[in-house]
Length: 111
Length: 417
Image: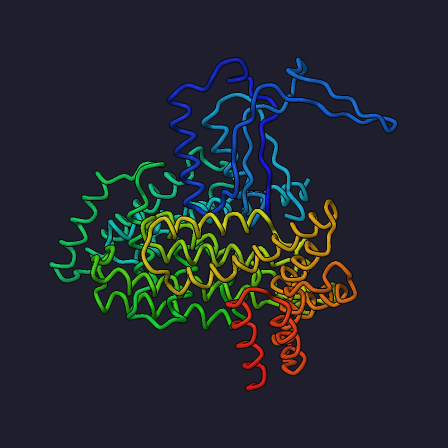
């Protein structure tokens, strides 16, 4: 089973670049998940997203940053595990490192 | 109310399963380093699991479940040593184990610490040549894959008691042979690693050969093997064959969806819909192959098989690129190149079909490469007479003497076959 994990609200680091200590902890977690053979892809997301919205056949482009809460920020990880609980367990470990905020886990089909 | 309690307990058990899958290999590896007996280490780890199953549904999963399991296993170890001491076992043995217990008080592996060496030692113990292949497979899945005896039995379609017995015997054999907990010396590494990779690929193939309707534990073996392979490759980053096996498995696994039809019937490589190939796994496989090549030296058997599989993947990519080119800039010559690409990607019949459509094309009337390509495809299809006349026609059309010789040689070869 594949799951995409991403942050929807990372209050702790939304306005400040990650500290070297946090980066080191993240590096360890990435190494650990790579060694465990479950991390298929991961990356950080840039700060200025662009929205592409379609309505009534028209497509509208809006450049960020967006001020609403729950904006997708931070990073993502695509993992391959046997159960959803396993993905949750890794997400817990991620959250312990990054501090306050919220991550979302969704199963990826067709991957 | 009762029902919601039941659901919560089930949730807790699934959470424990997940933690176990993640933590058990390092837990057993860490314990083996301390007690120097993989069988005892595994029993202690199981004791810790039982404690977790008893306590976590009430208390919740602890903040650092790996450390909790390790601490609990160590308490059990000390309990056991005390109990065993009362049984008046041989003094020498007790002394050794007490020494181990003392070590335990100081050697507390921290989370995120370097557990890699212990894991690697455990890999080499589980795949030790004193064990039969079947025993190696069962022990590896049990100790490093975090699979239960029941799961292994379901995956390999054998009774649970058979697997349990294999594991018990394997552990006994290791103890009797006094197999040390160590990474083999450089002179031994190649042969010992081959034994490890063999076990992993065997697990992969068992999963890959699963058919529709099989227990889901069977296809899941592919994932277990991929995880183990990636682990070993990360622990031995300078071993080309470890990366070669990972490359081979990633590329083969990329075809999982395309290799079975809607009714569960197998679809041969050449007939598969390449759009269903998992591009992410192909890229991962190619990246692993690049690591092999970067390490230099002659390719080993896994790397070679991976390289062949990669060529198939690339042949499809080339065919797809010609499809795109033919749409943008259609020409008889592009079409002929597309026929060659199709011949490689989908087999000579697919290539010939495209090439045949060009026979009446006026622009290619005196173009020697058209009969040359058709000759090659016909020869591959086992139609030597037609192939020979095509090669002869091509030879008559070319103005390059060397090319003519080559074409006549191929025509002659057709007569001989």
